[in-house]
Image (tube, rainbow, N blue to C red; front, side, top):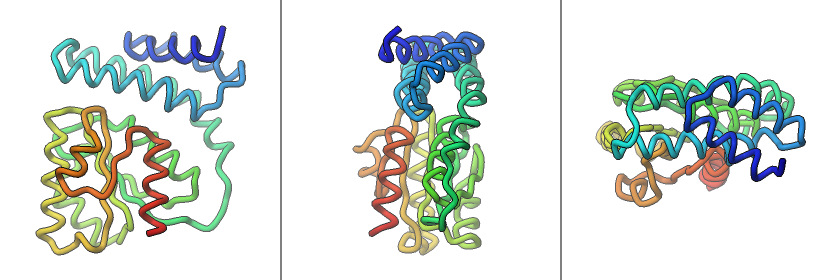
Length: 216
């Protein structure tokens, strides 16, 4: 099987919410020399993004979304040890705070971004999911991250990214933290519209954006 075919089967297994099949496909891909980052960015992340888009426009329903998320979670159990092997101990490159916004309980994509950033030497503060705007503000004051990453899986909750950004401005903290946004319904245009500093379409892109903003 070609690498392209292997990746496409992983995408399909996430779309179909088939956890066991997804695990098996990921194991086979690793054995065939496909790197874990490629599997995540081109397989799992793409699959969950497709599911999120279909959920947003009414083609799929909440149980479908939950099954897809579970398939991705199962696959990550296989990939996390491989990612751990890639970690290189070095001076922390910067401090990044991440959270899924209020009203949204999805955290798979955010967790992948957290793992990738940690591999690249960043100190990660993961606030989890369903995080209220005031919690972000309190933690920014207390922990002083250089970057805040806001995740939203649904088109209905991505508006909360704007609310958080607006509340940070009101609190007088905007000059102290750079804001990046991500999630299935989010786009570069949306990031610009809400005054964010960057947009990460996938984990690899998020790492590049964080590096760029830290260096600035």
